Length: 192
Image (cartoon, rainbow, N blue to C red):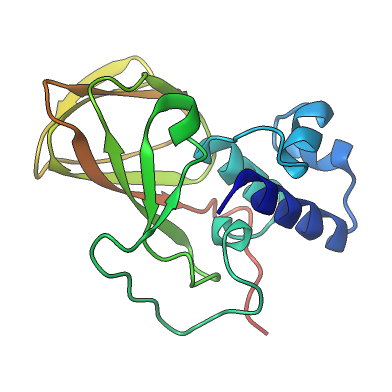
């Protein structure tokens, strides 16, 4: 799914809620200009920015990526068949493989992330909660002032409102499952 389609969906959700660019930009800690560029598909937004926008609009992140009028009771994502979300990939080189986008009304967004040693060190901050589980490779992960080294089988749950950075270590890509848990104080739309 490209930036133009995601941006158009964000605009559609915002206008359906009767919210202005200014109001949503302020809630998402963005400038009005940046939000306008996102809505017009002129910039590629990192997942952290999309998470803040989803919270500001009170919708699940999956709302920005789901096909229209879908809300199945379950979603199966076969190995290697998750939808690649390239929003952060274009900025830092990371690959986000979405594992359950077809299910719109859920409390967590699961992704398979791949960070290569040559990728940039991303810096993020957003609401909700985050959990990662390392599958392969090694990762230097900084949360606030703490720096951790994670390897296969390690997991980390943390408050993503703290600044956090990631960097693959060694010569192999770091691959891990990442769950973005929606902020409980920003309820999502419920199925009617």
